Length: 236
Image 1 (spheres, rainbow, N blue to C red):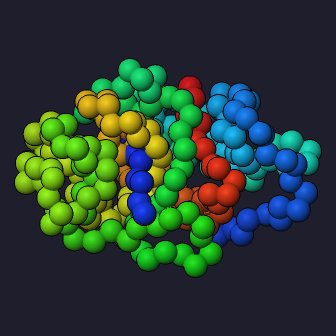
Image 2 (image 1 turned 135 degrees about the horizontal axis):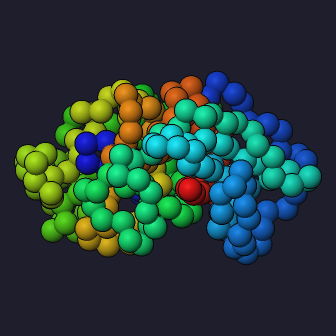
């Protein structure tokens, strides 16, 4: 997320999760559903879905859905979501540095931010510290991974004007106060893009991530549960 792109950490809101006793069995195998107008490719076991439905310009409606005994129900929603300044593009056609948000469905494996882990949250969490970068150096084997400059393995000293410069996470303390990692480009395809997250809104468009109001993102951090195999579906 160069400049402010929202990606995939393999580390490692004010609302409590609704009761789960009435939930129906999770899908045993992947299937496709449409929620809030967004096509979502479920994974085996998925009972939590975040949808990003593009409305106009860089605006989007972002919602959290849960699977119940009566089907999929919307649990949270905001109309103040944001997407990349470069528009939306199919994930497999995305190019690094274009400011585009990738369409498609992606896992939500972990979170990071300026705070320590919330005791009520279940996803793995990393508290960012000085020297932490999201690697966007196409020559590094740590491409699209969280890494501290003291660990080496990437050219952390490159200026932001260089296409291979990595994102220093502490530079975005507001947007990354709370951030949810997606597994976009977990395969590390070079030049496709790195660091697509769901993070707190800044002043306007992102550099490819999805963003939403702080309260909404904070709620998601507390509610998302790895046992529910959460995914995010991004649509037009």
